[in-house]
Every structure is written in C-alpha cells, then in structure tokens.
Image 1 (cartoon, rainbow, N blue to C red):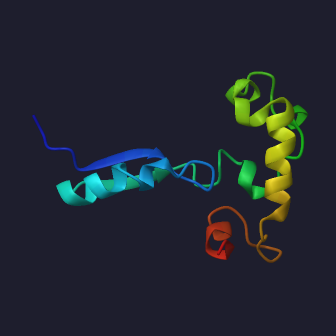
Image 2: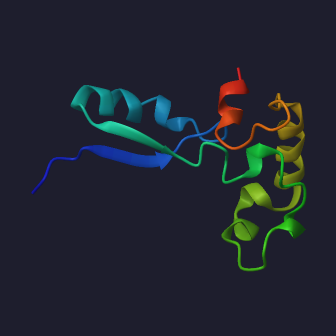
Length: 98
C-alpha cells in the first residue's frame, strides 16, 4: 500500500466547499491538492452562452448548473466577472479574478 500523495477534486468559483474541511485536513496530513475544473467545466470562461452550444452527448447538458433557470442565473453571474484582456484565455483568467 502506498500513502496518498495528492487528491484531485473540483475547485472553482462555483465549488469552494473544499475550503472548509478538506483543504485544512490535506494540509495537516501533508497531502497535496490538485484542483480540477477551476473554470467551472468551461462555463466561467464566458465562452458558453447557450446550452445549444454543447454537443448532444456532452454530460453538461444534464448537469443542473447547465440547464434551465440555473443556466440563465449562472450566465448572469459570469457576465459580472471581470474578463481578461484580449488574447488571454484559459488559466490566464484565474489571474484576473480578484
């Protein structure tokens, strides 16, 4: 058996629940943390403006964040986020968000 070296789970502006208990525990145990989907599975980039942009077999089409009123509500939140200067995308966005 090998010790756990790192744990990967979602961590973004949408999903920050790891901050309360998980991150302190990992720190205490000396286990690394690898954030997954820091841009909310692409949504927080501002590029997804409609569920129709997603392929029919895209799992996000059935995720509550990407459907119905939740999609519209989340889109309003994304519209309020500061966006990076032209030419910066992907992980560069994380640097811009205060």
